[in-house]
Image (cartoon, rainbow, N blue to C red; front, side, top):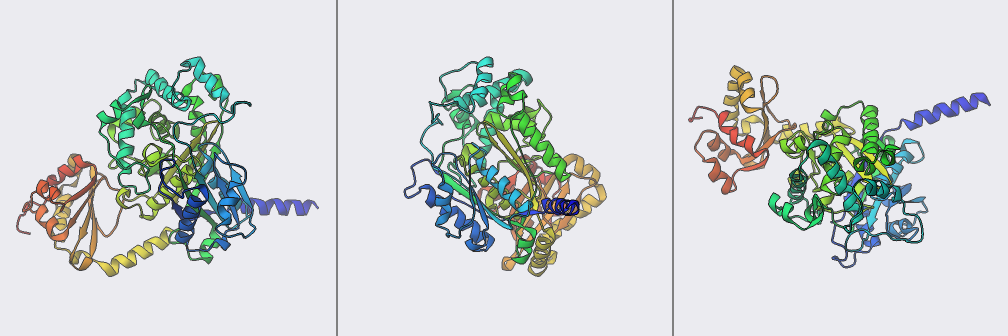
Length: 546
């Protein structure tokens, strides 16, 4: 009998180590509650599930279990949502973990696969919400955040504004008192997220606002204005998770995104015992989950390229930078001022627009984050693509509380690289582009005086060039690391991306085309660090007769 127990324990340990992958994602556009007709939760769930299954290239009968998240709804909405996909008799778990419900569904699905209980699991989240700010649903029983509110009352009191805005707004006030953060820092975060959302077709809002417009929008709870607060939303998102065996059996290696590590943490004693609003809204549980994730994955914060985090209010995004370890405690304001939270900076945070602009249907948010990060890693994010994104960080938070943190990257990069290399080799070479002569001169200059060029430029340029016959080429001019370099045919993380027609780029590089004129004529497209792009003349070839 003892022998059997030992063998059983060993097999369980082996199964716990199973790798888990996201092989398909899908979501609806997030909408203002009630705006879209025929958009009840079964409708939105069907749309997101269908998209996720199509993305994975599998039929619903391959799904062995389903974890379905929502906050507002009657019991067994999960079953009602998936029955329309097929009544296959699978186990369906209904999940509610406040605003972290979607990521909790992923966390459960991951554990089912990791533990060897299933090979393919659907994680689904949706929400059909009421207009206006969140309200307490039950007055005849204890509110699950009563102790959280008590901390706030002990520190900043209770006002007439929405309670959730007070809780996170007061966390922002605490950060201002401790570290000298300014209201403009929070507003800059909202400015960034609204700007990011203009490239996201799934976003509830897709309007760019000036910093002045954000600061002058109606005050909700100091320092928060309306444009710094997430809206209520209707919407759904879904992800198909699979084991390594399932991935290989279904030839999904090229698109399989591995969940390297995922942890959930709940409130620690400090949430209630230290009269800190920052800790009351989840600083310490976020830090605990993040520390465990990076330790388990064996990676550093500096390895991360793209982040989707829980910006229910701009104040929470700022303090979460510190809780996740993206900057030192008290230095989040400086991180914002440096632009290290957007394109051209150290990280790109919330390229989707975040909750502030994309919207926040509670049960769907964590899954929408997963979808965005999967698209980023697969190079499918369109106009919001983070160049060279290889490691993605997710953070989803629910008061009450729970924080879920995860790290993602491509699970089989050799399959993607071989595919990309094969396409690249057959599609184009340097000889196919007239502008190759300009890059040859840049390379000569870097080889001769790279150290000084790096000191001047301090940036990595990505040139996307369209040539004759539909051929496309990519040059990376690294004037930031070591003594600099120029490479063709590889795409790595860059600070600024310049896209042009081959002939126009040659004219630009040789001084025959004015850059401002090219920009306004639509011949020159720049994404990322605009000020760095202005330094381009520093590395332009000196020869005008190329």
